[in-house]
Structures are given as C-alpha cells and as structure tokens.
Length: 305
Image (cartoon, rainbow, N blue to C red; front, side, top):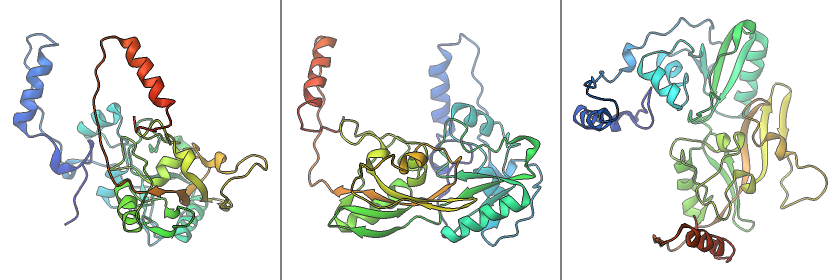
C-alpha cells in the first residue's frame, strides 16, 4: 500500500506526533499562556471530512472526483492552511482532480476546462504557503479543476556531455535525484520543501535552494522548458546561452501557474560530489562573523551555506 501524506498537516500521515508527544509540546507552550490547561484535540481523520458536492462530471479518463483526491488538493501548507485542515474545513475543495499522464493529457484537460467554464489550477507538490493552489475563484466559473502532474515524474533524457537532463515537471525532488544518480549526476537543488515539491513547482515559483552561495535560484539551472497553455504549447529553444534579446524562459519563471502548466524542462545538472564535510564555527563578535562570511563568499571555494 503506498505511503500516504497527511491530508491536513506537513509530511507523512504516519509521522505525526503521538498523544504523549503532543502533551509534552502542550506543557511547554502552556508556560507562555498562563495557568489554563491546554486541551488535546483528536487528530483529524480523512474519512470524517465533509465535502461539498462536486459541481462537475469528469468526462476525461484522467479526471476523478474521488473524495480523497479532492481533499488532498484543497489546501497548501501555510499556518492558515494547517489550521483549516485540522478543523476539517475543506469547503474550498476542487470539484475535480486531473491526473494527466503526458503533455497531450494536459492539453486535453485545459481544452475541457475551457469548454466547460472551469478554473484550471496547476498543482505541483501542494507545498504552497501563499494560497497558490486554492480554488477560490468566485462565481465566474462553473467549477474548479486541480491539475496534478505526479504521473509525469520521469527523467526523459540525459546529455552527459553537456551536463543537462530533460525532466518532467511532476518529478519530486527525491524522484529526480534518484533517477539522475545512476548517471553520476545531480541537480543539486534543495529547497526546504525538497521532499514534497516538484520541478514544475520550483520553476513556477522561482524557488530558491539551500546551497545559497552558488546556484541559489532555480533560474540558474533552467536551460529550456515546455508549457501547455489554453492556446497550445509554448516551447523555448535549448541553448547554452544567448545574448539575442529577452529570454523567453523568464516569462515562465515565477509565473505561478497563471500562464499555463509547465510540463517539462531541460535542466543544467552537475557531477555528483564524491565527498561531503561540514563544520560549525563560533565567533566572539558578530562583526567578526560577518567578515568571515564575506571572505568565504568571495573566496571562490563555494561552500554550500
């Protein structure tokens, strides 16, 4: 049975703290709020969630109105999202969830949404903390369709000579790294949400990673990409670099899904490191720490942080 993510909180459903751990957390928090005892509420169960009826009949093979899918695609992972999920508030659930298997399916879903007056909401890993996946679209639409690319999660091609890889946008961080590893390559891009976020989501949000003294933003790693739109597929040319006018990738980077659904990208990859070492350093004065950080950043040694 596949491992399930929590329908309301961050991470895996089987990694949530048990009641003893929650009591310990409550006792620590209580010291900030006086003597009133903190009462434990039961952990919510997905089968207890009450959903509004779907307004949409799924007419494509890759679409579903399954309640669990609708629940999983309702909220992101901001604090507000977690509170609403814990309280069982899923009133904003999408009416239908699309699970396309290839770019053709994505185009078909967008065409169907256009014909039926549905709002199409691209969904990567669901880790948004800014409301990016919410279906709060008002009365102008007949319903909401969440488009989840999790079935499009493969490394399609590797160019070892140029150190580049063509990767589908639905690949989670661990998935793409696992597929690059046999080639001795890595994308070496690790945002905080690495385990549960996707390549397409990184591009759409102009994500930043933890290796902040070298390639800190996904922008630096995108060589070319493809994006399905209601008017067709936008594809940029794969070039090492170009000085001929504006770069079309910049239109897509940070577009937050407003222009279309990113389906794949050629990404610049690197040889996997053979060794790793880490160290912590303390300083007597803050100013000395700042001076050291500047010296390291300017040294050309490229420490990760």
